[in-house]
Image (cartoon, rainbow, N blue to C red; front, side, top):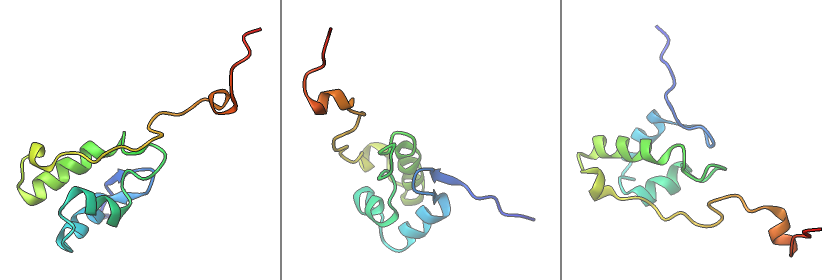
Length: 92
């Protein structure tokens, strides 16, 4: 039987197994788990994986989701159009 790979963070190719292994290694705090595994550090910045990671961490540590919390998203959270970085947009 082939064991399927449960990818949680597609950007950084982090699997559920990777997360559970990190928790077993002692990285049971969301911030340290993020740094150890690289979750939410890719292009989506956690928009597609963070809730799944929090759920997995909650189940593995038997902590409430509200107790775990969420990490701080740092800019740029949303894409910035290049014309904003370049200066004023020409409206002609």
